[in-house]
Image 1 (spheres, rainbow, N blue to C red):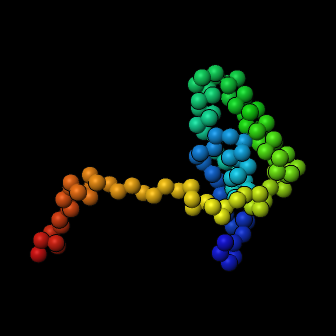
Image 2 (tube, helix red, strand yellow):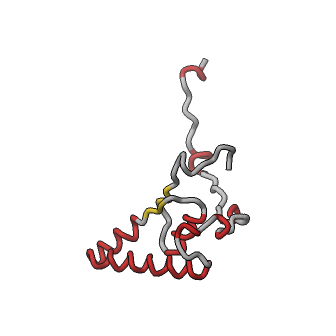
Image 3 (spheres, rainbow, N blue to C red):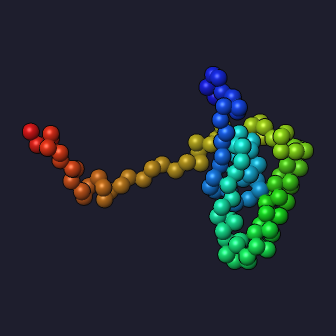
Length: 116
């Protein structure tokens, strides 16, 4: 956090990768204002129609409530960053693979300035 950080100045919305109620809990613990659940909504709608979306929302609600109970948080406002382990977060990122096609096959673009 930089000096002057304040949640009143900006909001964080997590959109992508949310598949369970625990993912919502983690996002809120890390400071998110809201999360997007687009893909689960689309899959539920495509497979089961509006009843599928209602069922998906109920599942998310039940999973989030269970996670909150297990973490000892009675409501959403009591979820803090102390509920998220972030010290090993860099271990979850994969190294960027080398692009052999780009680096070894294609010739760099030569501009008029580089021809002089």
